[in-house]
Length: 278
Ligand code: NAP
Image (cartoon, rainbow, N blue to C red):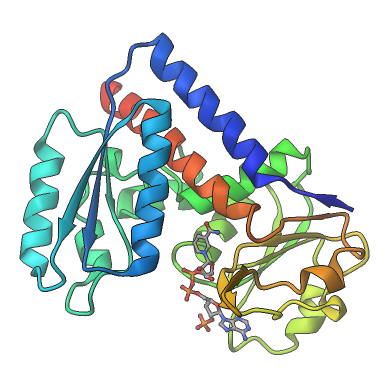
């Protein structure tokens, strides 16, 4: 069994991005909008900021009060869309309940949408065309590629049909010629379906959801879920119970999570290219 090391690959990718920025003397700028004071979001924003500092991307944070209106968020995005200096824009999720995240994030210009959440980027993924792919999805595919795991013809079972991971990942996997089954909270016989997976991806956020009865011998398990148990960050899979049944498995923390940040840095480079190429 091989533990897939997302931290090591993140460091490698981030060093490559830093190199490209230095060699080409690129001036890149990421704008992050954070509405309210969600503690987890502050940590995620800090991680993005640290990665930007390391690779040489200027990172401007827009910390908005939790009472900020939807119109105010959209007018800030409009301003950043029009600002030639700004390469990428991230609206940190979640936002307070009175704000429609999809509506606001949907106003980001597609070539500045480094999270890959706008209609144009979703359409490109759906149609298997070039575009900015959501970072966690891109990170999962990159991790599989790094370990030379062939996707063509494999049965990939994705547990979770969320808009950020499960749904876009199903398209990314189809684009790589995998046969995809997507499960969710209403799926019947989840255990049996998971047992048919060559590659089992869980993106739910429920500790111990994936147990050894659900994993075929030699399967690859990609654990995207994040939850806290006894103040510890854990994934969806009962890692100790299933690790010896798998051929490859991602740990939590240290697997998919670090890849997400690395892919944001790559998407900022790509955003710059997209803008320059019109
Ligand atoms: P989400 O939008 O809430 O989606 C969760 C999905 O899980 C839904 O499709 C839901 O089904 C399904 N589900 C819930 N209980 C289930 C059960 N008992 N059996 C089968 N399916 C079940 O969440 P998300 O944004 O996709 O995120 C999923 C997880 O990934 C979270 O833990 C999040 O923190 C984590 N995450 C990690 C990273 C990273 O970088 N590592 C990035 C993004 C997200 P229904 O659709 O039927 O409700």
